[in-house]
Amino acid sequence: MRLNEAENKCVLIINPELPTGLIANTAAILGITLGNRFNNIIGRDTVDASSQHHLGITSIPIPILKGTKDKIKELIEEIRFNYNEELTIVDFSETAQKCNDYESYVLQVKGLTSDKFEYLGIGIFGPKKIINKLTGSMPLLR
Image 1: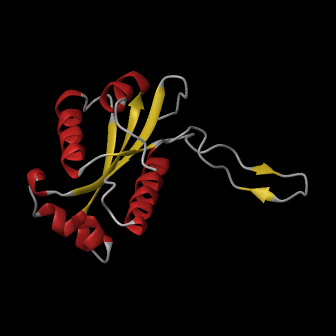
Image 2: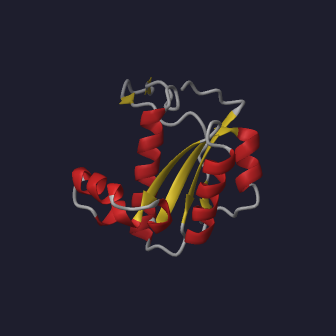
């Protein structure tokens, strides 16, 4: 999917009760996954005045918001029920965090029903109006 900065938005919602390192890890995993999913979310490489190369970084702001595990689960359910076609969500769960490799994660997920997931955070990408409606009242994670 191509990025239209005027019409689309990306947010991360992370449980603020997590330890700082796990908050950072959750944000990194969600950001990498969203960056891989969408064309043009990363800006072009650039060169500074000293001729040093700098890889492109995200071309849009990505606010990180606070959300309890219950709020995160509620948002996931609402998006899947009402906005599944318009929004893309990526989740990071306790299941994922506890697995030592990706194949273990895949096997664990196959054995769980959706109601059994405990989410550490989610990333949402899609139309700005819908994301603002869903997350506009949520505070920034500081």
